[in-house]
Image 1: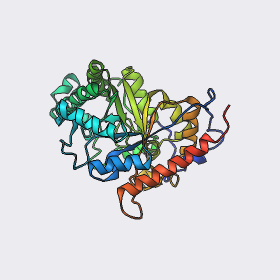
Image 2 (image 1 turned 45 degrees about the vertical axis):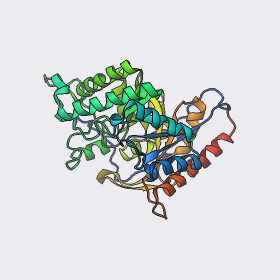
Image 3 (image 1 turned 180 degrees about the vertical axis):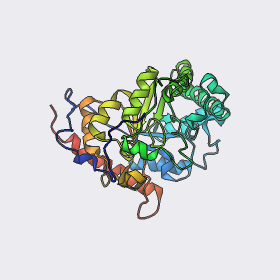
Image 4 (image 1 turned 60 degrees about the horizontal axis):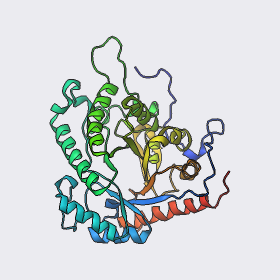
Length: 353
């Protein structure tokens, strides 16, 4: 059942314009010794491998992450296809560029698996789930050998997501969607039952290799909002379950108060943030446009302040998604990197305490 009372909204509200009554301030110890960690999502540079490493370093990144290697590396593009020797070579080449790997993935595991397709009693019987789990486990093995502490995956799609998005209106109007749980008068497993079981299977493997499972928070998946992510995380109950949070994606999913209440929801689980910006034009009909950071609806200034106050150990992984005037991906990433750096400089020059 959906909530009987929902807030009707046809267009997005700028996150920074929430009312004083609904806004709250997170307080903690002095943040003078806090250092922001800056990274880049490597594929968004849209450059050959060696050029992408050089550009990431020149732009100012300390960390990189990727699900597929840029062309021109001379290595398999997909992480599970690497031999251990090739993985060690890859790690060394990135280290020689003055960069660190914060996160890796075998492509985009579970990104296009509809949760309704999974049979609760035998989830591993789903061919695509089994294949993508095997790839993820191989990636965990490589990560463990290389000293990379986290691998990335997705949290399955809402019903029919890639076949017309039939639940989108419900999700927007309920600020992210309602994950069914504890179905009364039914012997059928709920959505939460399936999510918990499927993710627990993955986390059993993560425990073996001592790596974290970092879930993306895209609008198309069950972790689309900080509220939904936290509900899932609390149900699963694993310290290995983390998030790479896209605040702009939470806004695009209909979540309110993202920079304040949203940050509080997800802060204990943060591995990194996927930084981009967008403006919601008509949320009910999924009409939005990507913008440079600082020109969209995301209140990154408040998020950065809260990260500093709480000394949040998370990488700010810059992406883009918008088109730069030059049309080049590297220029779009550079614009976003410089914009977030300007906001960081502002926060670091503010008094604390």
